Image (cartoon, rainbow, N blue to C red; front, top):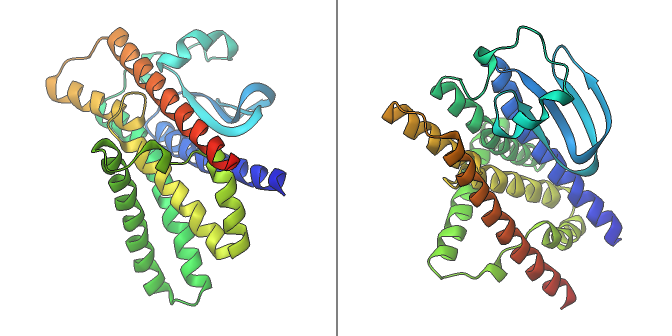
Length: 261
């Protein structure tokens, strides 16, 4: 059964991350940004096909995905891997976009996750017999409660009222998925809603490398009227990413110890 739990966990995480990246993609296209690739999964490409201009790909590692936009720092070293139009210029670059549009693109991913959480809760409320109007309102209330709970958890962590061992990552999710399956479909859907809200809220935190951190940079640039050095922003994001990886590694080790009893 553990293999089934792992597969379900990977499926939940991948769907939620792809929805997150889908939010970025839809708003980026609306803002005129050239999206180079939209990928499901990570690692080596298994399959790819061009749409009107974007490469849509399926990758080997079945977790997550990404939306690669022209003008992103991460895209600069990969230009040779894509068929780019001859007339492509900075007007379709994410880096040269108006700050308001850039913020909208960055916020769209987390907002998509919050909307997904709301939709899952709404469906559960309908399935248990609430009328549509009540389900609509209750779903917003519960989603808001999830968001407050997530913020409170991190406040408790940074104020010393909670320890890292109180948190779980993807490895810990495997056990939780098994528990939720035992409780039934409604519990599984509410659990997925909580994870989606968690993904959305964490990405809105004003921390380097997260969407929220990049939103803060865009706001600083908009208010100051000056563009921060790309090297400085890159170093800031790298430091943030490294810190997140260390945090994730510690959580993973804690999860493994919990599984071992």
